Image (cartoon, rainbow, N blue to C red):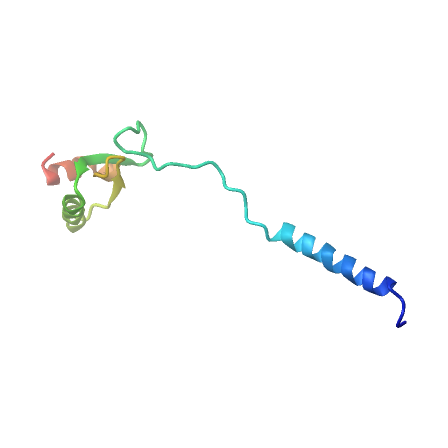
Length: 103
């Protein structure tokens, strides 16, 4: 028992095997392809949303959204590649939003 190296070798092999298994299980996931945000100015399809105001500074876009919110129209903002913002609303609200914003 005191001079038997087999137990020590087995213990080292088990620890190394556990280390390899744990490293495999907990390794970071591979990164997928880089998906860039859709620029509303270039996109032919924005799903359920339509651009009602385009190329605004942040404060102007927030003011437009506040006006729409006060009227009960849900809206969103989309950042363009040039740093400006677009204000988007659902298709059903486009006419009311444009009338309200004067566009």
